Image 1: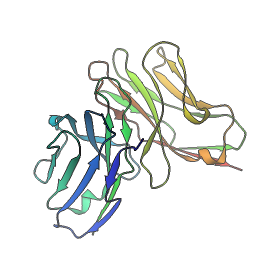
Image 2: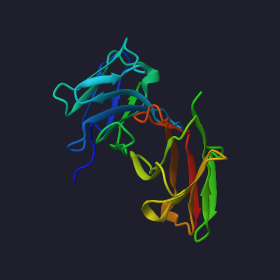
Image 3: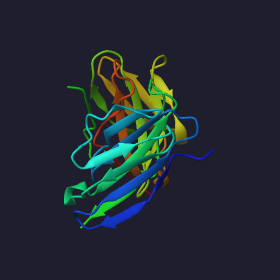
Image 4: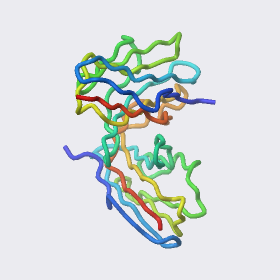
Length: 114
Length: 114
């Protein structure tokens, strides 16, 4: 069974440019998460979806970050414009439901802004 | 405030020796507790979780963790370390009133020497 799939794995962009990350969760998983992991730190939640509804986006910097999960399956996270401080790993994760079920993570999208 | 503490940035152990990676939490009530492992340039892999029941939880790759409610701890253990166990380990907690949310510690780097 395929795990959480993310692309691209690595991305280098210049500041002020846009970037987008794509995620396909484990089949049948209704809940999808985007986490941000800065170097040397634990992941922090950016946004959580239940099917196509964003039920927790309180930590998403909405001035430059946006996300969507139009059909309740795969999802896209966008940054526009990117800043130097956005260099980090963007982790997508999914779970069957959001109530105590194990959250499974993808390999991450490693962003470097220069 | 809800938080997870991993007091050791790095743990060094010789191959074949037992290992312990410490985790304490500050969450009211009965939280769900998790351990994840991250290998270099990889995403997080689920190791084990405690929801309820037996305080000793067994997980993947021979790891286990012991829940201690009075000490609010959930230390990760393995009887005999392998060089291949060298990685970054994250403890995480879900508050009982918000089990969809994972709060991560800052991680502990485990180095197993041959």
